[in-house]
Length: 92
Image (cartoon, rainbow, N blue to C red):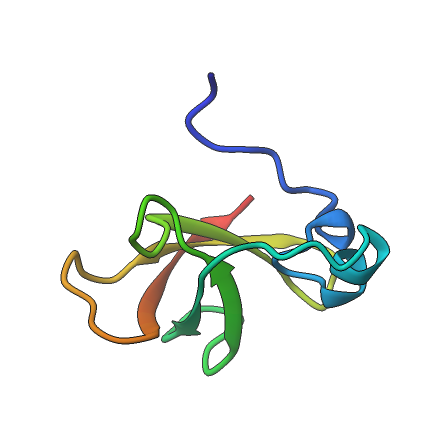
């Protein structure tokens, strides 16, 4: 199993695209957190990310306005509440 999924088609990702969620029958995705992007090309943005095994995901791939995808990493292991800070790694 690959360590990272290829999320190049984020328009179909129900976590990143609410329209895809409703197109998928509005299926409940489970708990989410609000990921705050602290730097990089998408600095200041917030997105919903699905919780993985009760924690915020270690990395998230976020589509940028120019069509590229930016990979962000969880800023710290200890996060509290429904928000988690992420820092920019690189464009995928």
